Length: 74
Image (cartoon, rainbow, N blue to C red; front, side):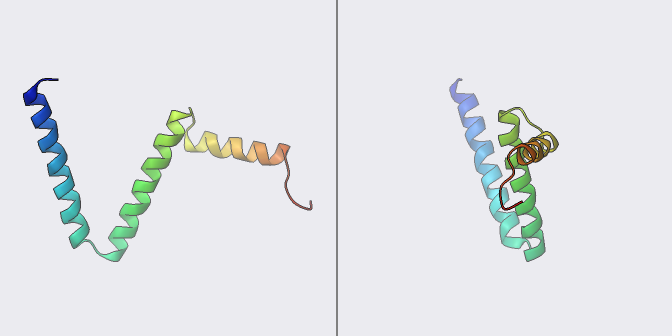
């Protein structure tokens, strides 16, 4: 990566950070909850993608695990 590419990426990162700060300063409580929920979903999808699952496949695997290894008094 040359110096120009580095500076372009740095500038873009700074622009994104400033945009996020502006958005957070002027958003209402409901908008903040929606944004945080969306960010959490994106993080979850990234983690699941790293281990080779979609959210639906992961939920199926969890249910299968619970069926095979029941926990509790039942």
